[in-house]
Amino acid sequence: MERPSFQMSLAGLLGLVACVALNFWLFRLGALWGILGLNVTKHVAIAFLCQSLGVDRSVPPAPVRPSPAPSPQVPVS
Image 1: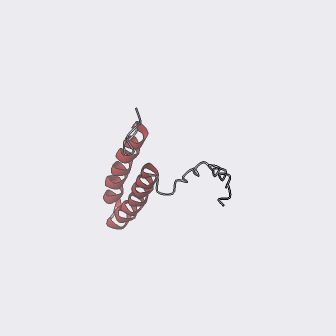
Image 2: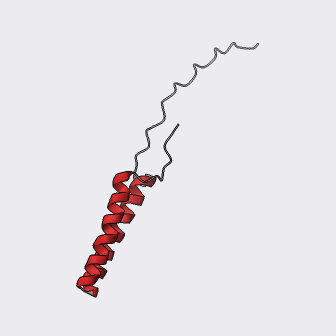
């Protein structure tokens, strides 16, 4: 069975909870700090989505198949 492409791991879930908690704490310090925290959280979330969806993943090249040998041609006369 293959793992679904968009499934959060425990570390990802802890990271999300940490970002939300950090944003609450930063908004208590001031609006500017909260907005800066939201900006950082947005970038972290987009990076996580790009990584889980495989945006810049290299695709292995297709195997090279040799072309079939040409059949011998018999002259028709």
